[in-house]
Image (tube, rainbow, N blue to C red; front, side, top):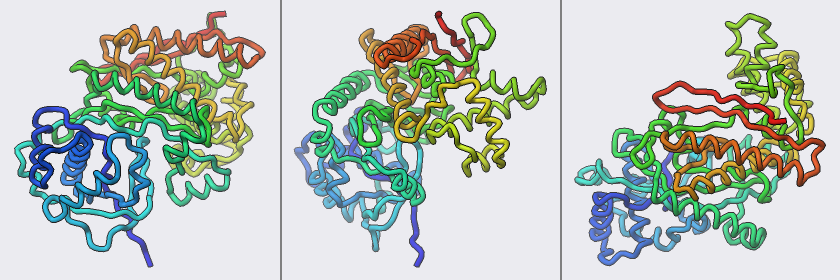
Length: 463
């Protein structure tokens, strides 16, 4: 028997009516199903339904609404009883339960990654909603993301089996996380809540795609491996967007710029471990593009191949750091298919060149000193501390993995503070962990906006 797995749009209670049209639409539908004096959670639940229903009608997908109460516990705005009451009232009017559901479906996470998830109840959204005068003009703001999620600890075998099956990583329930991690967990939630209060005053407006665009006013943080010092990246409604569409977003009506840490993983890992990268021969060891420096040594003057070799080096570097084994000897299936690195000998050429330039990577391991654990945590802490400093100056800044999103008018200030925070953080970490050398580095960055080419800012050592 073959199981059909289909893409769906999940009903997630994270949206709130933003403009007057959305507020009127929410109240109109609530009145129509008998909620004349709706509570705030009921209004948020309806706003989330209308946002998702509109997306379903435009994409031709069904709406997924799990009946499992555990699904809803991660969301702070609305509980399962409210969702159940509203969806039951909308049956036959705005929703039609699909016969034979639940079934296996595909969910798209904040990474843009699609995974099959457990069987869930599916509904067809009635096209009558398209006749509303508010359908095209209603704006909704994302304000209710789960603040802090923590992945459960997995053995290597469990993790590999899960990835093969396409299943999402298991997470602690919110109450279980509170019991397990106690005060540090609440502190992490408080930090996220403070960010989100500011974001709701200065939401990130996503570009319109056929209808009025959505607004992002909240982020959440995800830790890994059953610990609060592994992972910790921030995710929001914008993190799954590709580069060009994301760069069309605005804050307070102004265009944005994205500030990236250049070669963030190898540079940060090296610095935090108390190492410098290979000397470039320039004053203060200046570099602009770490992988480009490596590629120049491989092409030996054949600069037509420079971009291709750089891309291969970066892909191998990402794989080494993510895998956590500097002795890895064979390319993954992805390296073979996307970058044409098919043989062990070719893979080892790139691997050895990376280790020559970044000798600290020889300390990688598969338990913690890798991309998903140690490195992502410290990268995210640097981003968080930068954002906190900027918000104290009334400058909105959104996290994007190892990057910042700010208004173009704030780019010079944000760039300066980002680099200063990274510099201080790295030195403190080296001293606190008795590294053989305290690394005093000004990290390289790049500036990228929708209407301008990427501009690279040099990295260098201060002593």
